[in-house]
Length: 384
Image (cartoon, rainbow, N blue to C red; front, side, top):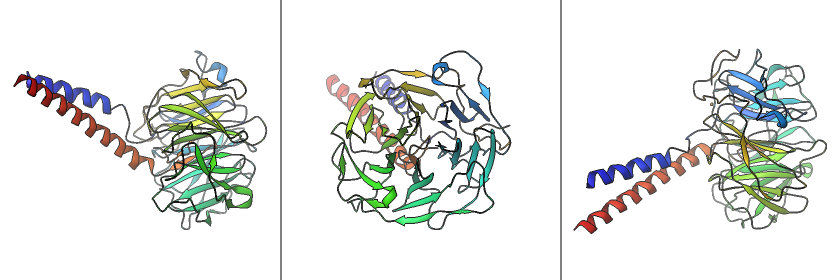
């Protein structure tokens, strides 16, 4: 009887802890400028899933797989929409060339590869956003802010582009920081900085290359913790809102930087710290490491709370793991760091989530096994 009880507890513990992954997806999802949902690195294929009104329908899925695409074999893959050029910039999608930026011209449906010079920028440890107005990447790598000017590139140029060291920001902490960054109003928002009050962010003003001294409060709704972000695009103009999803997936917080307020919406269906996110004007999309795509419909004018996540049934579930070939004949997956900026020019990068997420899973396993042992010891006590 005692052995049966112990076995039951251990099985329950394993089932509880295997829900979370240990690495992010090697593919990514983002949007083009007419808000078609694009899915890259799905079982060796890339897809255009159309606009939001078709995502749960059984209509055709457009295969956009083309020559020159990255292998999508890294679990820190992130992709960003350049709204002025209708191009997608893909980072960390090629383990053999981790610093290269792959450019997908969504109008011409073609790929090219942009070489960069890294300097002291670490392509294995960063979180990034793509600024809307300047089309410049801003990234936090190790302890510094870096920039990379993409000009108005729709295809690669022959000259390598340099990552420039902008500054070592004063985040008001001497503790190590696993970056969570988001973009809104041409400002880079640093969340989860040790010592910040809940509902607050440190702000880097892009156009003045200036880190604001005092944190900005957006209400006390969201916790000061690690998570992922995605900025909500507008049809015209800079983003004014971004979503923040803590690693525990307990809720989705939408921060408005115009009103300095926060809405609390329903947490994502896959509560996985390695999931990545992207957003259009009216939807927040999650790509889970298990290859599932889901979305939360959002109207900035009418959505106040709650909401229901739905599966994008049009896109086949991806099997991330083995990598897909550059010609689109293979299969493929990691996550980023911050926000890990996953996605549509919204924000998140790569690097730290892997380790911290793995630690959370391991910690959870230890906790559940400890609880299981407690139950068994309690039962023994009752039998004595």
